[in-house]
Image (cartoon, rainbow, N blue to C red; front, side, top):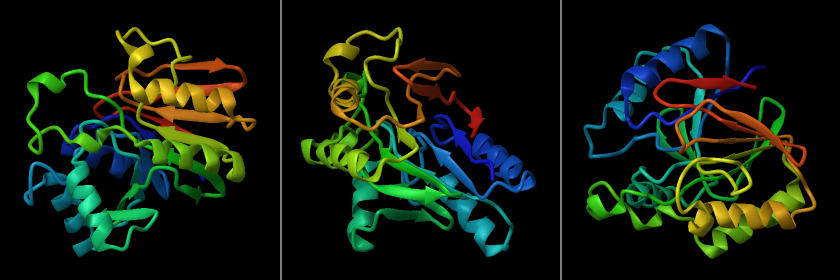
Length: 228
């Protein structure tokens, strides 16, 4: 079964609804979203939450969505939901819509995936804490360590992150000093296991490049997606 890998949506419900419809029509059971999803903020009237709630209430068919989370997602709310639900590997954000915890491994349509969302906001200086910026946007040392341990022990076929390792050539300043791409780079350098495909977002392009036997695929922006 084909999986859709959706790029950054930034809360644009029309793009999310369109991907959801196309996936449903194609018989796709899972949409994997690579962060900057935009659900659960700015508050309880979030249009994405209302969309999935309505889909469930009307019993409309559709895929299960799983996001890794990006730097522009409401980590405070997501972590609050995680605590309320007992810190599961998949945190329910809305009906049929989940957040995959950093370092968690999930088999989707027979394919083993590992997730590690988050990145650094280059526009942090114009954002307000708890309004449109959250400190937990960057994975912790413990989360990066868990990600590496699971990458080694579980040997997943697919990696899903918001940013990409430094080795992926991207025209953006300060990547070599930014925590997430540099830590991901160190992990892939040290790991004996190399996944087949690495999906990411953050950079808003539809690119792919093979480096050291791994195919890195950026999933685009605002309704763009790749198929497995």
